[in-house]
Amino acid sequence: MSRGLYTLTSGMITQQRKIDITSNNLANINTAGYKKEQAVTTNFGSLLLSKVNQNGIKQTTEQLGQVSLIRIAEDNNTIHSQGALDQTDGAFDFAILGSGFFGINNNGNVQYTRNGSFDLDNEGYLVLGDKGRVQGEYGDIFIGTDKYNCTEDGGIYVEGELIDKIAIYDFETYDVIDKISEGMYGATVQAQLMEYPVVKKGMIERSNVNMADEMVEVMSSQRALQNASQAIKMYDQIMELAATRIGSLN
Image (cartoon, rainbow, N blue to C red; front, top):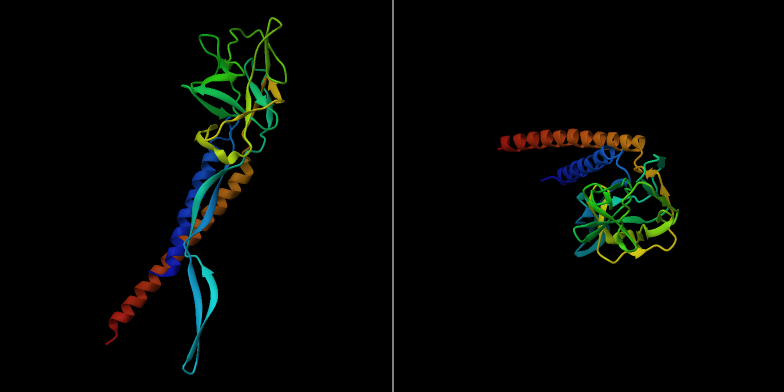
């Protein structure tokens, strides 16, 4: 098969992967705490190109360099930049200003998120939907009422008494966290409890997805995909013509 077909086909697959990722970003533009993703592309295999020089009976080889036939989308890269904070005045809405994650007890496993759209379950514990209970420094946070105060360091006060402090976790590098679902992450190492977090009550962190940027990315990938498709059709026509003419030779 022509090298060009390998290159064009891999390019189409890569552009389709980019479109899928960008479409997912757009679908989660209103998901609290969602962090946008980008495709990470890389070369798949390479060929060593050499030039053979002939001078009489003497032959030498000159290395020209390497070329890759295929480029693939190897992984997704999550962009953990701060999203805009919206004032909701919700009794159980929280946002983290700066780095860090809320901890959610999901069936005994702690998962991490920037989504602070919490509520109380029927037992009075602070929860994130059906994901699990929000973690404090003493475990699952029990409030039991909407009449409470929260300080910027995450301290929860009921009738003037500190009952717990929202645990805010962070990592030395975000390479150790893996996406579990939209806005939820798991970690391969022990998270570090932040000493001086900044927690805003009655606010929600919106996604860091910029619609204009994502639309430009989609259109660019679609254009590249269409160009590659047209080029493949041209290759197919050229190869068909070549095969026909070679077959007609006597």
